[in-house]
Amino acid sequence: MYANEPVLIPDVPGRISYKKKNSSEYVQYIVRRIYDPVTQNTLPERKIIGIRIPSIPEMMLPNENYPLYFTGDGNMDEEQKNAAENYAEDRKRFTMLRELFDQMYYEFQLQSRRKPDEPVNEYKTRKINSILEPLRDMMRGEAYAEYLDLAEEGEAKTYSDVALLLTQYKGSMKRFNNERM
Image (cartoon, rainbow, N blue to C red; front, side):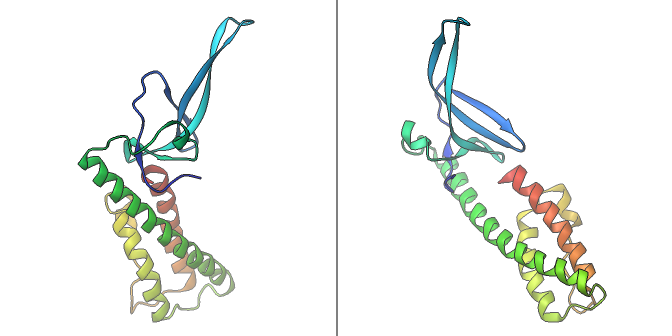
């Protein structure tokens, strides 16, 4: 489990390595080196201590191994502390919005299969926008954000229209999460 509070990647020359897997980059700490007499090589024993934050490459989200080898926040300066705090707040907010969005997305996918051409009422349109607006604001700086629309109030939208709109957001959120969070 990874913590929500970012820390600096430890500055330990020769003991930190990175392993990229899918869209994540794991920070590994070389605990020790073991000599293998058969191959006559020294093999490092690595432990994953965190996951690198793509938007702040000098920071990571630590896991349960991090406190076994390091303490504190790595002496962050004020700018780094502010970046870490902002990241932690954005991550919490994005996680909360994503959970609300996922429930809404699931519901509209079901409804679009059952009654695709039935109109969505104004109340639901307002509820949709109350989740989509903050998400769009969070993704504002990304190139794909200009293609994200809101469900316009007063305009007749069907369940299939809203399902399409939500599918665009779902793809953008996945990309945003992989690139920024």
